[in-house]
Amino acid sequence: MAASSNERVKKRRDALRAAGLRPIQIWVPDTRRPGFAEECARQARLMAEADRNDEDLQHFMDAALNDLWASLPE
Image 1 (cartoon, one colour):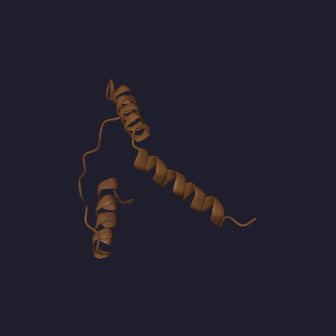
Image 2: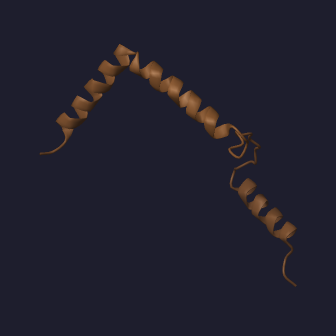
């Protein structure tokens, strides 16, 4: 008789534990929730505006880009 799904899951979990792993539970934002995409867009706009107003960041990014271009083979 074939193993039940519960038996297969237990066997898999036992093997993972034997390999030194342990299960954990994490909570993440619910991307299906109404308003989620709009809130992401709002936060992205705030970050983009902050980045535009940060001269030090702009200088850093320009220097990083110049370093990247200088390191590319011709």
